[in-house]
Structure formats: structure tokens, C-alpha cells
Image (cartoon, rainbow, N blue to C red):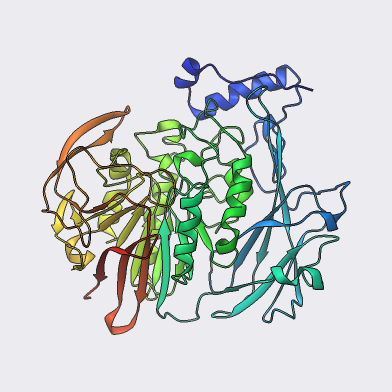
Length: 515
């Protein structure tokens, strides 16, 4: 049966919020009794208006023998406690029965079995535009692990046992966080997508042997427009390609993602996050564990990490502006206060998508600045990592909207004294952007005079306001990623480097706290 095109007329969509678009589509779909029922995401029947919530493991049956259904697209994430919790996720091309993970401390002894949850995702088709797509994501919550320990795991289901001789080659290791702080490395970028550049970025960061990777949003670009509207061009199958592409690294390196504007997928739930909730299992300690999957926090070693959803505060792309009713910002303040009160935490790193400070195409988002920068200043956040602009750009230490301290390549800064350094790390693989006309790249090996840059920031109502800035210190327009070495003890510091995909160092600086 062909499925009619129930898209919203573009002029109407432009005047509607995401929730209004969803209700419009829901009403039309139900009233015409079509097959487009927008299936369940983790048991939530979305066409009835329910948001994507977990209802426990969803039953799955299949006429295909389990032995003929190979798992793919493995990706890890920490639970709220990286010392003892790991979330193991993967995908299958058709329904399976009784999915599970086998795990152990030796690759030839996967003695522990953990049942997995099925989250089925139905993407309705649009005649002549896209087909109906059924996707099946599986997630196992593995708790009670030992800190600082290497484990081996394999994923399976009825008819497919990772402990069987033919499947043992897919057994993969991961390592939990250490019991006490010690040196570690993490990497970060945003705006990845699918393609040769994205794959090269995966290979480059894997060479750094990171304990985990931060992804600052715009994960796969199945939604090509990124406005959060049902009229956006969309192909759910891009997620299949993305997860297959990332499997070689994300199966052993926890992939800690947050939410970009291209990750608002309007077909799945009023806020557009039903798809992200189905595909990822992330720490559930944010202000709304199921409704905002990209908002959470975790501590690894001596660093506290906070992931935020900047769609909630963005003036530039307002589809989800204010959707949390201020709850996310109130949660952020509580979390920053908690981290600063912890004796274990020496540094705080915050990552989200939209830029607080950038001079490239999207420039800076005034909504981010208004909502969150006062809290970053009050709690002396050490490093903020953004994506959105497909470049590398790094500020000096910013205090009160201006330069608190110049931080040239190779320099150092103390956030308690100088302010916060903001990094745009949007060179993860998607097509690159440029800087304003006449503004040159300025990086290690290509240092130009540090001049003022004419740019703008987004104001409420999607207006942009011109500004001339002095805080843009380092700029680079190639594919790149961030590598951060966290050291503890009497010389505690964050050694931050930006690397091109060939390993060339673009930028480096240090963040120290002098007590």
C-alpha cells in the first residue's frame, strides 16, 4: 500500500513549533486511518501523542532464523558511574528473540550473560520521497563492574551466540574508569556524518588511545536540513550507514554524544528526540532521563563532564527553544555546584552543540550566552567544547564577554583567575566551513597577527547582531579533532591539543589550577 504524503506545507511549517507540527501530523495521520502509525519507540505508541519513554524490553519476533541476522553498529557509553557501569548498544536488520550480551574478563570466558532491551523505531514513508523504514536497536545495561578493569564482550540473540566458535572474532574489549584518579586521554569533535572524512577522523582519534570520546552533536545528518521541522529532508537509513562506519572505534571506546540541531528528528516525538533515545543508551541522570537523552553528567578521574542540549536555548534555530521550561538550566546549576563541591573533581568540562563563541558561518548563539555563561563563570568551568561550525576555533580565556587573559598557542590559563576557554571542534567529517571574508587561519605553523574579527551573534527572534571581537585566538579550516590529556596530583592540568586527521598539531595550550 502506498503511503500518502502528509508533509506540512513549508509556509505553514515555518510558523509552527515542533510540538505544533507533530500535533498537526498526528491528527492527519489518525483521521485518515493510514498505515503510518509512527510505531513504538521503546514501547511508546507515538502516534497517540505519547513521548518516547522506556516501557521495559519490547517483545520481538521474527520469521527469519536468528542465525541469519547478524548484529552490527556496536557502540558503547558509560552509565552514570564509569567505574562500574557500561551501556552496550547495537543494531540488527530484522527482529530477533531474547537478545543479550556475554561478558567476562577473558576473551575465551564470557561467563556473565545480561539480557538486552529492544527499542524498535518505525519511520513512516512519504510517497515518492522516502520508504517506510523499520530499525531495531538493542541495549544492555551492564552494572556491577570492577573499576580499572578490562572486560571482553560479545552481543547475540537466540540463534546467534558470541561464545560460539564462528562468532568469537567479534568479541571486543572495553575498560572501566580507574578506582582513583590517574592520567587519561579523551578526544572530542562534532558534526561528523558519514563519508571518507568522517571515517578518517575515526581512525585518527583511535590512534590516540582515548578512554572515551565526546561527540558535540550533529551526529549522522539523517536530517539534512537541521531546522527541527517535519519538512526537513530525512533518510533514517543514514543511521545504519553511520553506525556501521563507527563500529570499529565505538565498539571499544565509549561514545558520549549530545544533541545537535540535525539530531532533532520531527517524526518520532514532539521534541524530535525519539530517534536519539531509541539509538543511544546514555547516563540517565539529566533533568529528564528519557525526554532529553543528550543531557547528563559523569565523572572520570579528576574531571567532571556535563553534556547539554543547546536546542533548548538557541536563538538561531528555535524549533525547541524553551522546551524544558528552564529545567535544564536549573539542573545545570545544581550539577555544577555539586561538581565544584566534590573533592574528587579538579576540572569541569562542558560540551554541547551550538557555539557560545565562534566567528564562522553560524557565529555565536546569544541564547546560549544568556542562559549558561553566567553559570560557567560562577562555577569556573575550565573548558567548553562546541560543534555546529565546521571548523576549529579556539578563544582566549573569556571573562565577562571579553578577553580575561590572552592564551596564545602553547600558553596556559587558570580559569579561577582568567575565565573560560571555548573551543569549536566542528571538523569531525561533515563538509567544512570558512571564516568571514578577509579573516585568515591562524594556527601553529601558520601564525598571523592577532587582529580583531568582525562577526555577529544571534539574538532572540532569529535576528543577528554585528559584533567586533578580540577573543578569536586560533582558527583552522581543515578536518580536525580535540585531544585532551588530564593529569592529576600536584601538577594537575588539562593539556589540550587540536590535531588534524594526519596527526599534525594545530594548536595546544594548558589549563591549570593554582588553588
